Image 1: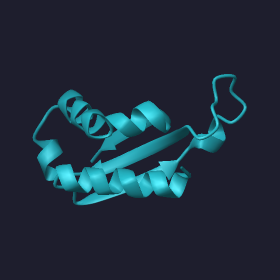
Image 2: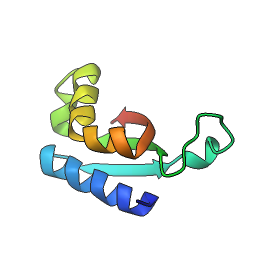
Image 3: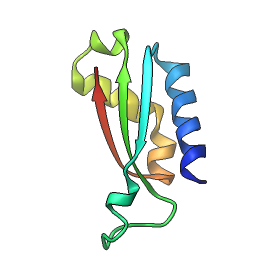
Length: 86
């Protein structure tokens, strides 16, 4: 899987399960390429999610929701995920 495929899957899954006004995904993998724990085909991504539904919950619950939706991707393709809610 490449980063563009992963971004599309993440956007699709989040939009399917959460009412999102906007989702931005940034590839931050380049910042970690020289780390000892870097694995090829495992990406570092930054999510910026604008959602009225998630704003109604605590940041912890919103983060848990996103992790649950993306559990397969986190297990297989995402090494690190940063989530910002706006």
